Length: 548
Ligand code: ADP
Figure 1: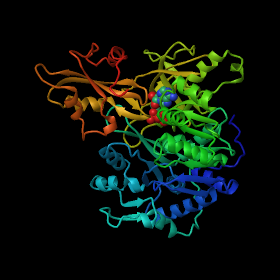
Figure 2: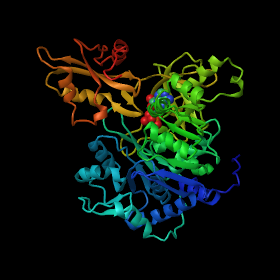
Figure 3: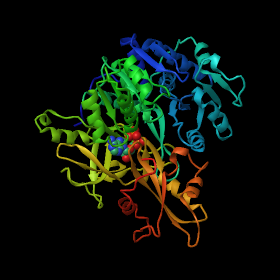
Figure 4: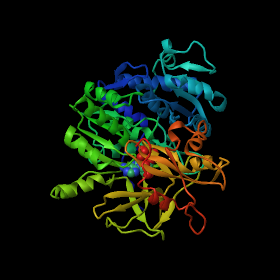
């Protein structure tokens, strides 16, 4: 017998519905931004939604048609927020680009995505001018500023002023209704090998992620919150907060490019921020500032820390000294990004304090919408006993199915289902708490940003005095991990640390250059000739970097 169809309305899950909802139901709630120019800008969801509609009109006037990519090089701010909605809401794809990458990489990403329009903050004008010859797909450049800050002369053809574009429109625009599986936004992640790869989110995946992220045992967003995302909007959509905040009607506070401890604390206090989110390195800066200046947090109640493991001491300091609850989270660009968060359940309340702390230090439990598995070397599922550790696989409504363009399908099969291999190694306990124990992918995560060890090795190998080179992650108190270069010199060749490091200048972003070089006689290999990085990591686990 055929199943009986339900009789409910079909209302597609569209990103525009989030901002529309906020404008209608929390119209007076504020969005506050520290601008690139340094001053504070404030307006409401009602104002924002009108400007998003005007932006949608302006992008159409520039010739954008459904599916076109609109690139952004921008900090967290209200204009970037408007592009999130104005572009995606009008069936364009909002493509956020990480401005911290090496210029050639930025150009490669914009060209791979075939960005038609590139919107950028004032701070990136010289960068975009420099990149112009390498941006063949971009037809229009939009400087996210007002008329008074426009440059008198520029090499950029078709450069528009963002505020002029908005002012020229009347806002008489209705958000279109279309298939919720339409692409909404695009974010590249640095791969372990080769070029970065794009994760192409859909309206459906983004709205479902916003629901999931807002749940009480996830980020727990509410209309009574004042939310300051420190995590950049060019880094996996600021972990979805620009979507979850309007969904619940929370006030939003954007810090612009000012991410040092002092600037952030000032904004926390001025705007009475209750909830924030960022990588451990950012919180280190905040804690240092609080300690040095003898300050307290008067309003901040909780923060999500993720992108790299949250050190237990950081949790204790924030909770015990400043009364800020730390929610440890794990995720990935390919997961939109939230996968797991560490919150206790009713049954954990009676555990001894030490055991509760131990659970909270793990990466946590999956949000509904995400499924986890761990597998051993034989590809078989491992038990959830908190001891067996294996490759972490995920599947779910906001996990990529394949990478953008022809960058491939990474999925693998387990028990008849397709799963995304995360490249992380983990245990899962009987209660479902996942803990990352290692990483099988060959990358280094410094201050929340990726550095490809293979790229660094290739550069070193190009040096005439280098026989073999390996790059491994070395623990660093501020950046969590920093690259350490291990080199075997060619017989008779001369090479010292300084000359080796100088060889990287101009070939890669400065912050990606290894911190130190160790010269060895030999690098250990597997039987098949692959470098045994695990062994190197063990060998140099105690190495202290020069500035650590
Ligand atoms: P994000 O930085 O937003 O998590 P990325 O795609 O840049 O997204 O990085 C994802 C990777 O970062 C994970 O696969 C994992 O290796 C690492 N990572 C993220 N969160 C944590 C965490 N809480 N603990 C340990 N590693 C983490």
